[in-house]
Figure 1 (cartoon, helix red, strand yellow):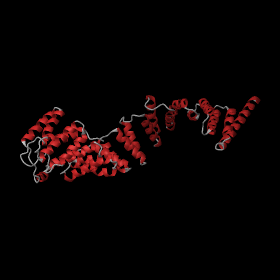
Figure 2: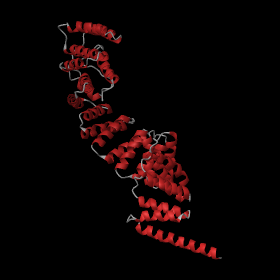
Figure 3: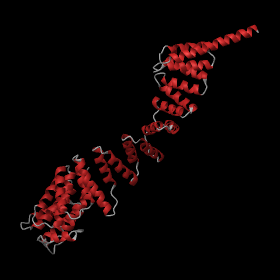
Figure 4: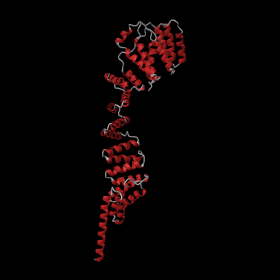
Amino acid sequence: MRLVRGCLISSLAAAAFIAALTPQSDAVAQRAGADESEAAAQETRRTPAMRERVYSVLAEAQACAEMDDYPCAMEHLADVRAMDDLNSYELAQMWNFFAFIYYGQDRLDEALDAYQNVLQQPDLPIGMETDTLFTIAQLYQATEQYPEALETLDRWFAVAQNPGPQPFYLKAVIHYQLQQYREGIEPIRAAIQLAVDRNEEPQEGWYQLLNVFYFELEDYPNVIRTLTTLVEMWPKRDYMTQLAGVYGQEGDDQRQLALWEAAYEAGWLQRGTEYVSLAQMLLASEAPYKAGKILQEGLDDGTIESTMANWRMLAQAWQIAAEDELALPAYARASSLADDGEIDMRLAQSFANLGRWEECIESSRTALNRGGINRADQVNLLLGNCLVEERRYSEALEAFRSAARDDRSRDSANQWIAFVQGEQRRERELDAMVQRG
């Protein structure tokens, strides 16, 4: 994370242009926003005044800088530096201006050195010292010198009067960059609380950073609380799906599902995998019809990838919802993408549920022929049942005898064999009676 240049420029501009080029009528450099206690502290330092001849050269440098003519500005600053009788305040303002010019040219290391020279001057106005310390902390952070940034910022806090939320946020950012997640919590919470105390709205990024700290520490109850605040104050897709994910991780399936459904209704689900995840949660929550609607919509419009697994899930959703007619085309699509007969077995079951016996027979046999079935005995039982419905008893007996070879289906298959043989005897007796009659 790097600080936005505009924020740093404004700080530098305030220090270099306004403070440097305001003639001093007394020993105190007045700062906008300084409170009474700070002003009183400033008066205890006898700061030399800036003389007119120094001020006029710095004013010329300012005119050049305002036109982004940095070489011209540097020439005038060199003229100031050549003066051999500069007092401490004039030296401080000269180095302050050097820092601004260096920063404008992205010469950040030289800007840092110039600001350190500002601090070396005795009897600095309190306001100038605190402004310089804060700017140095920002520059250290921008140049990824994080320990130095933190140390300088702590020095600034030691002398600053009534700091606002932003410095606390900066401190939290530096802790993040040092991977000091636990240490970053206090300053970012302080930034949020200060904003609330001042009747200001805390910034979204502050809560985002707080959430990162809690997440990295695996403090999921506080992750939930922070994400809940983000959802309430800045309702966005990412916050809602992240919060749903944490609820799922914590085993709160109902809240997880509620958030996913809300995201779906808001049109925030964008990827096919998200639609599939929602459908899976709905199936687990015994809402198969809604799962089927979502999967059907996504597969039809191409949002969900057309894979065997996704078509199978759709077919299962419709089947669980007792919508076998809707399950049939889904199973057919899944079967066309499958490498084994597992889907054909499920398709056969749907045909059986609808009393479509011939199609049940065909799909059952396709399943057996394709192979790769976990329970071929169950497919043979299903095939035998559909054959019985069509009164094709000899074929049914063959299917039941195949099923009986598996210990798991032997009892059931033998019962069916006995039933079919009984039906065959009954039909033979009827035929004999007809012939005698």
